[in-house]
Length: 314
Image 1 (cartoon, one colour):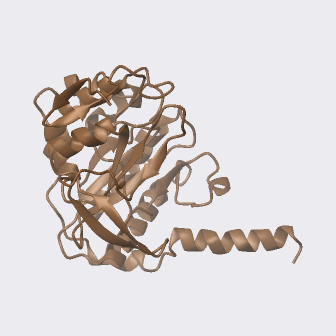
Image 2 (spheres, one colour):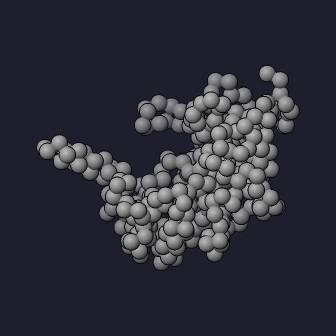
Image 3 (cartoon, rainbow, N blue to C red):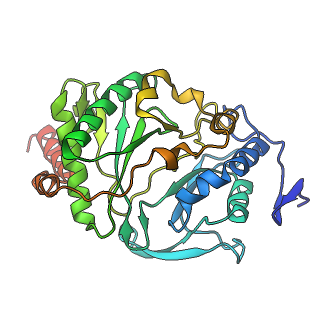
């Protein structure tokens, strides 16, 4: 296949084609955007096992974890045991411009790095998911609840749009925290935020139990991934997950940040790095409280089985 151009030794092909239905962007727009923000996005991808969401013409988007057989030898990889599928998965490590451009040419739109570097967890993360696509202001209100819970725990975090309909709050943690303690602290933080205004926010994992409230998702600890800051999303208009100062949240919309606008809005800055607090030690009382809260997925699984039995009249 003849390339349209070459950057950093990477042949780039079919750049004029549409990126995906509803993107209002071409593959060139994706490549140009990622190349423009490479000095901002590479630090949040580096040394982290990476999953990407790819789009191919005429196909549904698909999540790629295992690198394909045709991956260039210069793409660094790491082998990780996947407990759910009981197999080794060879993840890419997107550490440099050449690898990022190769992924862009593969039509990798979304970049989902793991929340670990090596064996160390790096962040506590809450995903604020409003009940509807047009309910972003509710997510902003819920973010205030989380910030209040963080303040009362003596912690600080940074916030970004998810690039979809909600927000992500990241709290950097000191190296050495046990995964189970990090997961517990995440549950406790969500519970404390919910308690501030239970009419607005909920930790209910089962969707039908949320009653139109913002879901405070505390399940991202451990080996989970979260879409990276500055990553585009496979959503109408090709929005970007974008860092926002806490005080600016009421004045922004997810649609403000797209592959067409985000690089210009950044200028020479890197707000994700600039707004991110230093790593912090998790308070003992937060961890202890979290260990008394059931794991959401497990609790939801048991509750789902109980409801199914009730429907059958058992």
